[in-house]
Length: 170
Image (cartoon, one colour):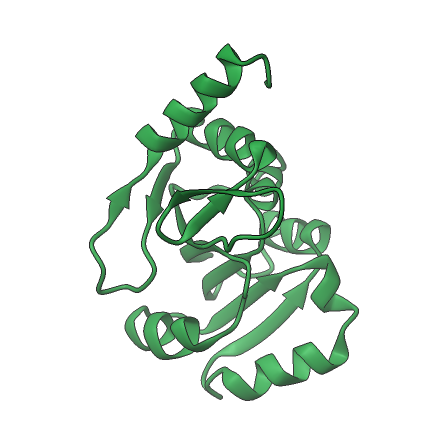
């Protein structure tokens, strides 16, 4: 299997994905990883309507998606993986999914989060997960659209993590 892109984007399938990423990268499968979307047939139907017909849409729970990748179910595919949370990416890595780069494209503000960068709002758990991913050697890049400049955001994550440690929050 070729994982072409692993992206954290809490909106999952939306215009930036369909008009930006899916028109730029070469994939034949879009794997949406969300325990909530699996049980929401309406949301799945809306996603299926938005995704080009040439791209297979799979919606799986975090556990099922991880098992499917590790068991080589997607070996013949070129896959874009969409996740909601950094902890989802960390879970996949800790359970055998191998990828070298993580795109953080959209983590929007909700109560309890703070703005880290333009399009990235985090809480302490997000920072802990991103830091654990970073120390495993995975590049963490912040980029909304494929034409945007790749920004290695590991230094910002490390700075936030160390500040949390000094404050006794780790």
